[in-house]
Image 1 (cartoon, rainbow, N blue to C red):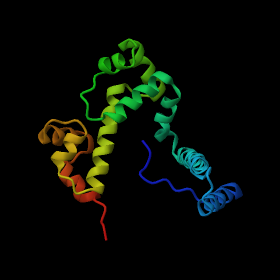
Image 2 (cartoon, helix red, strand yellow; image 1 turned 120 degrees about the horizontal axis):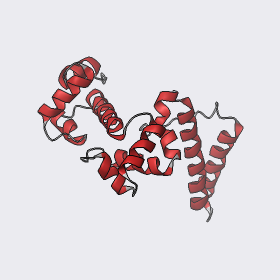
Image 3 (cartoon, rainbow, N blue to C red; image 1 turned 180 degrees about the vertical axis):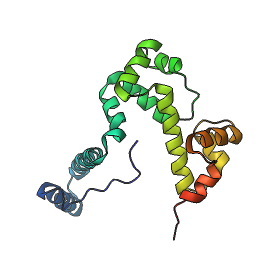
Image 4 (cartoon, one colour; image 1 turned 135 degrees about the vertical axis):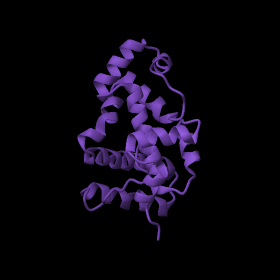
Length: 179
């Protein structure tokens, strides 16, 4: 759910971030007995700060899953959906996995996220597919399979309905040019 790279600007973060990095450097250089445990905790704190800053920089519409993560039921569902995006999910199967009734789960998910679970999943699948189309040279059939389609033809039809053009044409328009 996070980008592949998080950047934590030392200058933007105030003196505590810079001093934390300086301290970590001294610990590494000194090879103290407590260094590995201490460095692990420092890395965790810096990671959490990078995630916090990333999330606060996102527009409100892009932050729906963070709201969902605060809700224990919806948070578990989001973890399952994002962790197994290609699985043939139904609202009923997802509710069963998190041990709540289908109707209560569907209502709660829709209230917290702003759309029904399967519509959310479809949107996430297309976002993943469009990112793969743009950023990789993976064959379209592979991308279709990765996001849960059993055939390239079905993926092509669904992608065209969503974006107005087939995946190959979309890729040509949006492919990241690598130098």
